[in-house]
Length: 68
Image (cartoon, rainbow, N blue to C red; front, top):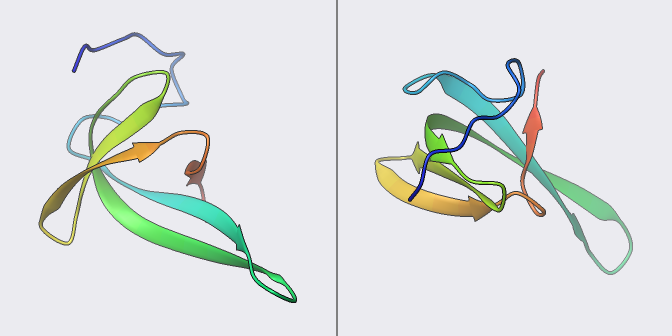
């Protein structure tokens, strides 16, 4: 994965915990799913994180940074 420079404030520090949220549409309503992950790196298309001991690559169009 290639590191890119993103504007300060939009990307967490490497190794920092941060929240991600995605919205899914059910039959009758929208439901939010949030995760607390450790930031590893990112590209314009995806986040690379560690969550529950697993390394994941999550699409940015689906998963947004959430600041509770």
